[in-house]
Length: 482
Image (tube, rainbow, N blue to C red; front, side, top):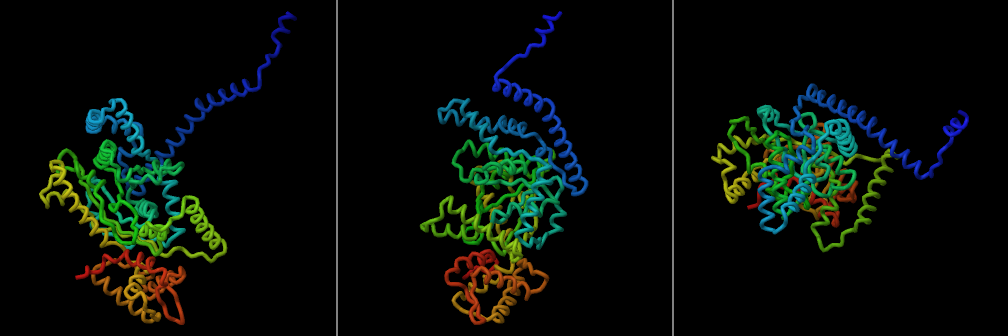
């Protein structure tokens, strides 16, 4: 008995590294078996709670497509018959093995398909968007075609088409439209960096390779866009395809519009959805990227490298942070969004005797071009006139001339009358025309874009390009020269 007890009481020695490995494996097992399922249950419960609140408080019906697990959507896209046919054709034409082509298709699908999370969208994304927008700008909704929006069939697929002035456009529209819809944006490759891309995917956005010449990639992308549209996912697109460079509207690009319309069937049978485009006009008293965009007008000018650009951005942020702490910081003026009259593709197709699925490529491009032109006209018509663009447009008429404040104010009142007579949407802060003029002139003088000398105001000679940039945002509202 004694010897046996002694044997039982012996200790077993093991190296420290082995003990640490075993302890790590045990902790990992406990995490996987106990903590992870509990966390999944917690977050799923929170997501369901948010979805119920969305439905009851905001009357937003989230399409089942957005709530479908990402892997299911990837599999559905991968096995789509048009994608599989394109893969087989590509393998034959390129002499690649079908397995290699399938791996490319899978990579493209994983790159494109988002992973929408209602909790992230409404509890994190919305809060961040609201805080950022309100911290930088006096955010306003200027005009909304409420009657037109009320006539939209609730089962329609809504697409917001927006002019693109700043990367703030994503934040501003998502924040202002959050009580009506959850938006799915097409985002360029610039945002595919950690951890930004994870947040963007969770917000329901999908990544797009701009100007890709890969036919197989374009097939996968087009089928995703078509699947989302047919499922009723509310989307937001920028027809210009990129930020304005000179401040003016850019000609539209047809890519995403063509994908949506290529398979659009206007007949209501079998529960087919209408496709409704809502034009959205955005304008700012100050665009964060104005100087960097203007550099693109002169490609021969040396642009700052990556580190230099980062240093400039950091310096800009630190200066504004210091002004905030010192109480001398002012927001960057007004940011205004207008929502125009919806354009129903069902009505458009009937009026123009079109059936998009039966059109050949050339005829469809022409038809999509007409739709794009109509949408760009509608977007231009609802771009708000803000104080800075208003004053800039006056000064650019005679940029060398110095004017008194009284002369400028009289010209501003006349300019407002001209624009209102043409049906433009002016945002007049406090409904006070004198105040609106004062805001615009003050912001331009604070930035040294306009100089004041002996009570006279004139455009700074080295800032004419900047003044023209802001005047360009409303230049399309003037009649075309003969």
